[in-house]
Length: 417
Ligand code: PLP
Image (cartoon, rainbow, N blue to C red):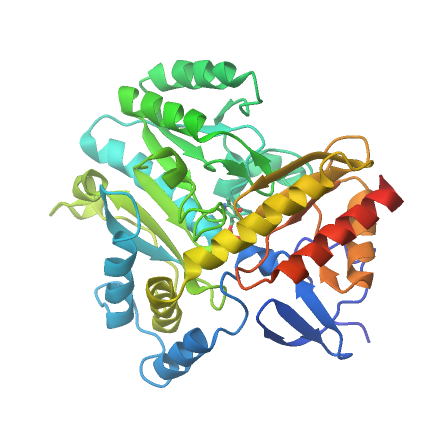
């Protein structure tokens, strides 16, 4: 009998069999047949230091035997308090409150609700949200509404709400993005700009310049529009700095973090906000309560994993590992540049991306699944976004491992380019 499991983002008609993975260590997965596979996309961008980092594993073990779960409304616990204090030391000044949830999507939903709640409780409701064309913020109804519409969202259109969209800042056309934002920001009903800073991830690994991010932040500040930075993917060092916002010296009003928060070991997310946003909800009037939760909010075991992750950031040479991966990727990009069949070779921090073949970065192009199989045959977990092939590896990856990925991209370009 085939498995009863319905897998995410998987067309079962094309992928009837899944590879059972039995264990993982560092940047490598081991499957049931004894095959070792290099995890070149950090298992959907979550693994930072490497799989099964011993200190995070130990923290999980210890916490599971002490306090497994407790309702987070009206109660708190040490791992949540320790993490909240620790993360506030790593993010831009001005962020002072930490709201826990369980996934990247919910951290963004929370951000949107905070923004609208804030203006309502101030007595001057604003409801419009501005986003960037081509962005991706998750798969819940709210985050699908905010993200780019297309194949992912088409069947659910009747459920989605409208947002205002500014163009992606194409090189040389950045002013159009800023002008568009300026127009929307002037509207007194605009509450927030929700943005993926510097990298549109699932939208095709497209990069834009820190100066543009800084100018967008300045426009928001001028018009009292809240800047929501969705750093679910870019956070925890992916772009070479702890946050993508750090490249631009931008301090968002609301910040969403998930993916690397537990080093990739357990699901958790946080939405951080400025004090005014918390204060506008602070009242003896119970209708101003922030009405959002999920059953497992701030699960102590996940929080303990996140605390261990912070500790690793404090006392292991994480930035040096990131720098080494970034340097190797930059060198790889130079090798790939100009190779026939590869276009738009680009690199930001630890992320390297390029398009294979002609026809642009069409997610639904059949090349995507074919490329995935091609890489799988070479024991590489690489999951292209259509023709866009990208590497987003754990920070423990070695130069030799990354060079093998670059070689495979060249080989793929020779076959599919
Ligand atoms: N925001 C961004 C920028 C993302 O890249 C993702 C996931 O890829 C999400 C939000 C959604 O996160 P999750 O899949 O954990 O819900």
